Length: 458
Image (cartoon, rainbow, N blue to C red; front, side, top):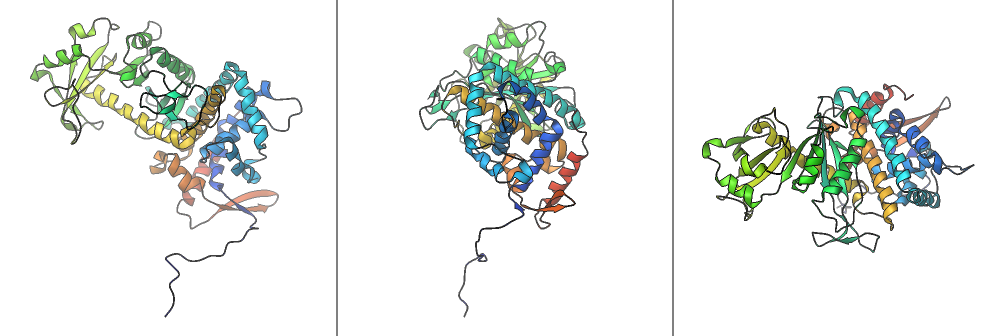
């Protein structure tokens, strides 16, 4: 009788392996950097921070940190995974050199942030041109979602404070361009705020919107083709008035708090005025209705604003609030879109929930914690996180199709980036040979071919 050795085969472990590249699928991100021109743009932007006779380019150092974060790293020292594979990622600076650059950029203040953000905006416009029908503005309308994120701190860091959820940390306000049902999204704003920053502070929403608009192509920085979408934190008089200001003319869809005035207005809506709510696909949503309010509840708000309320049977186990009515959950939002029926506006606003998916992806891409101590350093870290998220959004937009186009960072890392390959040198050229038995090798090779077919920048 043979003795069982368990469910898995036993293998002997030895070191000294050669010609094998770990995280070889990261070459997809490298090619995305090259074809987008992000490496050139960042290097040119950070020229003022390059010391004479410096060995390492500041732009390359910053991009290396972003690549490490895109591959799953969550601190500066994780660039070691790139340093171990020079055949794919090139020469990588030492940890002290990386730290010194972050300190130097943090000391540069707004000038350094503006340089990095301007480079990202220029590259973003090129990537959207390359993407063509897959770009987020292909349909003529562009949507930017704003939402706050609580980032916990487990040590004493500058500007860390108690949050409204009784935790401790920071409260950045994020902005994401929505890629729609056929894609993911990309970050366009991430101003760092103390943990006790208010959720509905109009000045912070205005700042985040300004940063987001600066990341868009010029044709989308004003006008009704750009929709700003927020939850009820953005439903303030000052922010809505800023969005609708003459000369800016932005479209908006912002959540509204159910005040006593709105609650009383809802009770006066006749049964015949309620319209069945619909799903994004057009199907009737069972147990949900919508109606538009007018009259006194619109006093003091910008001209042309529409206030739309929704009532719905609560989910099993959900607790009703004092502002709910007749056993139905009430929510409301405001918009200045006048040429669309409320049956279409209401599901459009509910799609703002996709911002929660973008936040979940950001938490898995360097936003789980802020690893540095000073606020200026952590703001640079947020720019690195946005660079990583840009690459993780641009790669699917340029090179993936079908279901892989919708993969979030965790799945991209598991299936594509973590793939190992054999490094072979032939005729003075290096080749990566991915294993044929890896289930997603065809996705990797097809994506590389699509990237190779794109024109080189400049």
